[in-house]
Amino acid sequence: MTKTELTKFRNTLETKQRELIHFVSNREGIAIEKSPDALDEVQHAAERELAIRNLDRESNLLRNVRGALRRIGDGSFGTCMHCEEEISPKRLAAVPWTAYCIQCQELADQNKANGEEQFDDLLVTAA
Image (cartoon, rainbow, N blue to C red; front, side, top):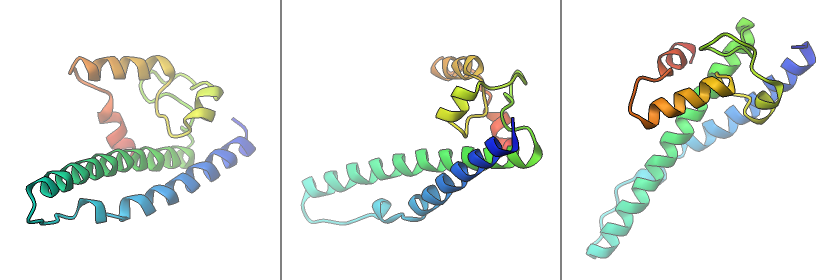
């Protein structure tokens, strides 16, 4: 991968990181609100659950973006963390924070759906 391509990916990832940090730091949606009306309580609980899921999803994405920035720094960006093959440029262009090639990602998704072990241990150490 050329230095220009790496710079482009770094800029994209840094921009995404700033967006995610702003989103993750806003936690107003998870505040517990009390209401005298039972239906309002249920509505607030549903909204809070949705806000928590969004926060969790964005936090995981932030972890992946930070991991990708570290991989750029250590020279391993663009290499699958599972099989150590090169990740296709098209995949990196679509999902620059990916840690896996498409085949390993499909395997990880399949294992997750089956409740089996995942590759997440690699991501935790990378992030």
